[in-house]
Image 1 (cartoon, one colour):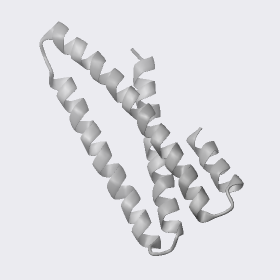
Image 2 (cartoon, helix red, strand yellow; image 1 turned 90 degrees about the horizontal axis):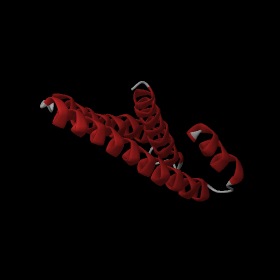
Image 3 (spheres, one colour; image 1 turned 90 degrees about the vertical axis):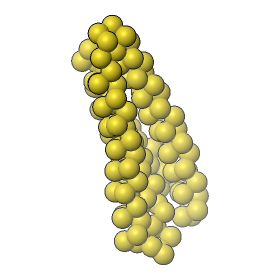
Length: 115
């Protein structure tokens, strides 16, 4: 879905600045969607922790999320740096960010369906 939306931005916008603004909107939407899934998983793990008295899975989930944020930033940043100072650098960064965020959303969605 994110790929289709990114493609739509690239096909329908006339300038690099317009594409960039369009991608900003998608990025913001994906960030909100990811936060919803993180909150949901946190809630599930907090409930489990209350039930079994162990918070290890919750702690590890929080750590994995922090690691994901760091990975996403570093992975997309090097792609930006390869193209900088060209205008396409920001587009590459935003596309990477959106793709990795969507991948994380799908991962958390899949985990929830298996419960």
